[in-house]
Image (cartoon, rainbow, N blue to C red):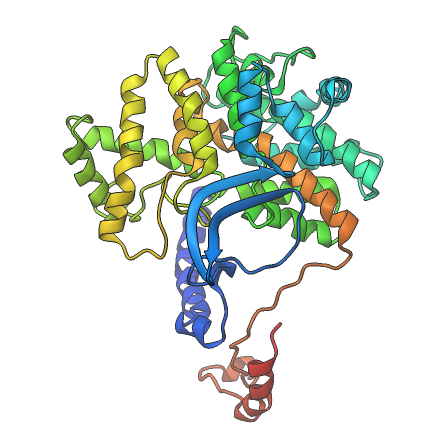
Length: 476
């Protein structure tokens, strides 16, 4: 009976999805007619200005004589160039996640004692309520670790006596706790899935209070808790570069929208997680890895540049891989000439590739990074340049680190929660209005008919005339 009902539901949904499609289709020309920017971006890719922030700055162009000129991408955290931050950690042989988190949350770089105290605060927060792993994470494990993570975040609210207290000190307390436990929730969620659904061994390693976030992620993930310094430093850099990227990216904007409604921290972060998990946002690096696998299956010699170019051309022409016409990892909504995160990351990618004896694979990625923009330029009419984005290399790095694909996007979340927390607090401090954009209605008023007289649809012409002015001048 259950199987029969599932079949009935499948047929019903299939039938009515067509009705939904027919009754919700909007003529795309109307976006231009009403001046609506699709995706809140204009034809040149410039976003609608919807807020003010002092947390980060993205620079992808300069203006000279009123002409916008693309430039090498730059990213600043609280006024500091990301290249300088990364270079500083590299030259001093230090982990930078905690220091960068301090910078984004509090607006200034810490001194030695402040960083030590902050490190201890995060370490002491790396604990979950009694039996939480057993009662929440191990129950109903899912291959979708982002959903598992979101479930865990929402459930943590049940253990918080001040869940709805939106005072700054309480939100900061909640944010620091969530930043600390995100790696635990994600990695434990994966282990539960790997055990119950994949019949693999099950182990739970406690984080070490003396280790950095990156070291603890690898420690908790691996059966033997072992990792090299290079592995941990590369993961640390990945976390830093994914930590923040302005207020306009989908998940951070979601954070600010839900915050503006007065919602609690757990609900806000759950909403941000739901936004991040999409393949157009945080899940893009998985598509890059899958695309590269498909390339290697269809190109006899991956060192043959002409053969690789032909494959990339097939991708753009929707003749290969998922036939979406995309070369994943190429292009960004803001950057055109270069994504500074990808540029900064590439140094560490090469070092890790050497340690893992993956030089040949790295050379393939480098080749694609070089020739893909040429192929896209030849095949597509684009309004700006195209370059590799940070997702292009991150999936390759996570694969070399032995991180399963199910954790690719959660790794992104472990970093980006810092940026979300900073933006949530900035929104609470400065803005007291709910974010409510406008939508233009193109609805046609109809005459209500009794259920026995609904064979023919009747348009309410009188009401349509009365609404005509409103529909042109107002939006809802």
